[in-house]
Image 1 (tube, rainbow, N blue to C red):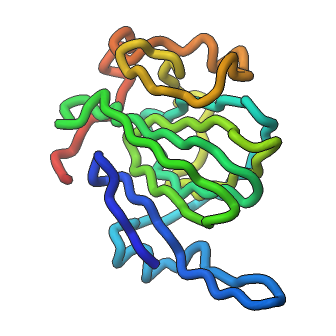
Image 2: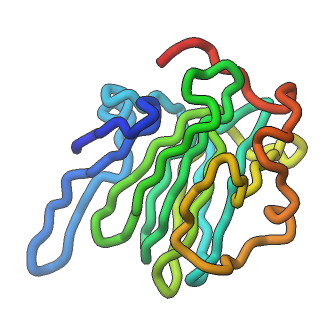
Length: 187
């Protein structure tokens, strides 16, 4: 597999080896030792999956305390995936990176704990799967406004379908820093 750090070095783009022939293909979507050697420590304790239609925008989600690292991939369809550094004190606080993930290329994105995450669906539908490093805790669920003008994320959809809950998230600058994760000083 090929692992490439994005503009925020802790966020990693993973391109697995795909073995294909006339029958189809095979690939490993996770291997504890190989992923740990590539800088993706785990452990992963929960797997999630969502199915969404074209134009759906989910995010920007995070959890604090008990922030979740995520290993995300698209099983069917295509998405524009975004990770925003919301770790107070981080040199890249308020910066974001993105990648197009699709079932065609099998790429994955590792988003470490302390980042807000979101995606929008570019295909007719998308089946989105992700592994998490901590369990979902509704009482610690937080979010950042997907359309935060300071972040200026160029979402590639007009008039996205956004949940009522996601519409209520505040811009990052208006969130009490005590509700955000802290940077631990490691890059």
